[in-house]
Length: 164
Image 1 (cartoon, rainbow, N blue to C red):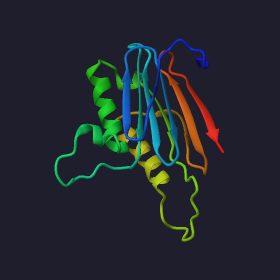
Image 2 (cartoon, one colour):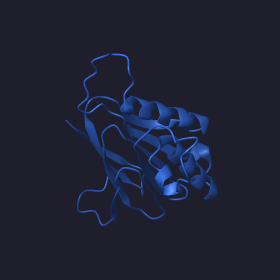
Image 3 (cartoon, rainbow, N blue to C red):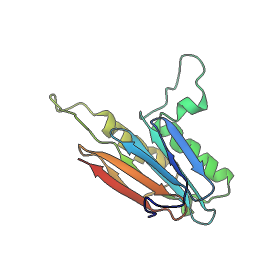
Image 4 (tube, rainbow, N blue to C red):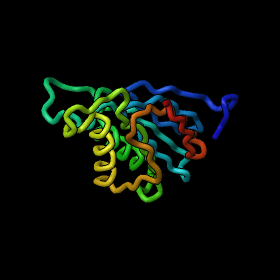
């Protein structure tokens, strides 16, 4: 993974953002209950990262929702990235996918039965990736700690730091 003195440009993603890079770039973000999903195609030299906040896109939104607002939702963002990689000519079997986040930071489960947003986000990511024909190559989800990730779209490596 490129170090802090890397000559690669770095883009920080805030919650609800997605970036697709066609040139080697460091895509970075910090995740708590949110989910970060990386897509990388070595043959095309293309990588992407999304930072989604909630598990599912509202099926009957009040009024029209812009696509950029859709990136807040795990299912919408994964399907959008799948479509974008398809349009670039990537085969789904050659795209490496990794999942991060979905933790329960500062969460105390008093009832014991209610699924948390972090867990719902993780489950949504795994489900929609499977529906789209992807298998996650790696994942670090759940727990009670945040994560900082730096994704090098030049080589597909993800540097993960647990925020305890």
